Length: 172
Length: 122
Image (cartoon, rainbow over all chains, first blue to last red; front, side, top):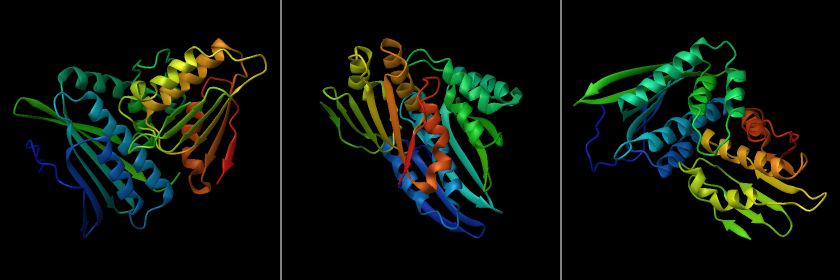
């Protein structure tokens, strides 16, 4: 259950479930929170350095996206769970319809692209100004998760809640 | 001299205009990299190197968001475009255990600049 009640800023929690360890956060996403999550991931048990690095990069990209594209306070929630040797990451936040449409179009383009690494490089090469948005972040997220990425949406009190669901495996 | 102390999401930055050196150390995922790196960017845009001189950059690798990669990549491209193709030299310091995982970030930072990837493992 996601609680976006204004004024509640729960601390980053780590809980142990039967299936593995869970990192859970919900509240205002700030750069300090991201730094705390990275620190938390350093202590993630029985996990290869490569997986930890991938999870860190995903957390950075998805959470900074929430900070950059929020309207009002950037509330979000994040869960990381180890399931049968894979790692499932869910990141949720509210966004407007325009941003959701852009994400859907961008994701469709990424899925249709056979060489995502090359596509990422093309996007990087197309940047001519520092504030130019070419959806590089979403391409990177898609690349790190090797396409094992889905989005879910639901409407809560006329607001759109978007959840990114990704899977990271412990192999190259 | 421009010195910025390390923060939760921002690296330590030291720019010495007198000897054309730039040091960046740590994570860089500030949500507004344009604002964070403004002084460095403004200096870079107006930089005219003496003949044969280079901007020597040392980057001790941390975790970078794509918006931060984008901005630093643009800084290097701008300096090269305004000076000469060998205007920027970059040396990456990276831990052995993270070298492979952070290679794409290093390559992205120097993408399309002609800068050779040079690493020192620590």
